[in-house]
Length: 219
Image (cartoon, rainbow, N blue to C red; front, side, top):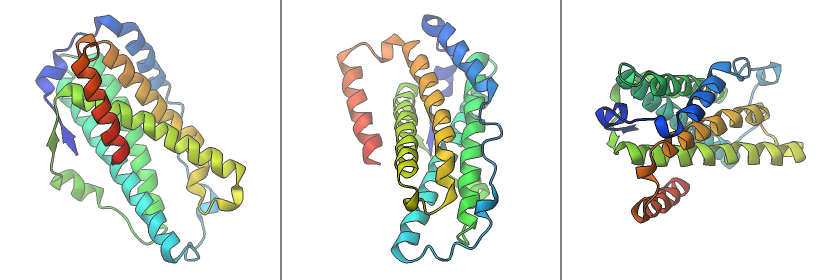
C-alpha cells in the first residue's frame, strides 16, 4: 500500500495536456463496465473438484489480484479525497478509477468465497501500512501496473478463448471487458504524466522509468 505528497500533487498544472485528460475523464464517466461484474449461474456450484496444487495456485492468484486491486482503490480514493479542493479535475478522475478498482477487488473477493476464503478488506483498510513515494514515482509505478494489468488480463482471456478446456473457473470470461478498465486507467495516467514534461524529458527520468518497469514486472 502506498502514499504520496498530496500537497505537491494538488499543485501540479495540467495545461500541457488538459484536453486529453478531460476526454479520458469523460470515458470514465461513461462507465462502460457498470453492469459487467455480475456473476452468472455458472458460479453456482461446488468448486471442490479444483484441488491440490491447482487449487493452491489459483487461490493465491485470486488473493494477490484482490490485494493489488484493493491497494489501487485505497490509493486512488485517498488521492481524490486529498486534492479535490485545489485540483477537482484530477480528483474526479482518481475517484472514478477508485470506483473501478473497488469493483474488481469485490469481484475477486467474492470468487475467493467460492473456495471458503475471503480477505478482510475492512481490516486492511484500518490496519494497512504505507510505503511513501513522491508523486512522479507513484505515477510511474501505477501507469506501468495498469498497462501490465491490461496485457495480463487480455493475454489470459485470449489464451482461454482459444483453449476453453483450460478454463477452470468462470471469472476468466470477464477478463475481456475487465482489461479495458486497466487500459483506460493506463491511458489516463499516461495523459497525466505527459502533462508534466519535467517528469519525462531528461536522462534521469528515463533511468527511473527503466527501474520502475523492472520493479513492476518483478513484483
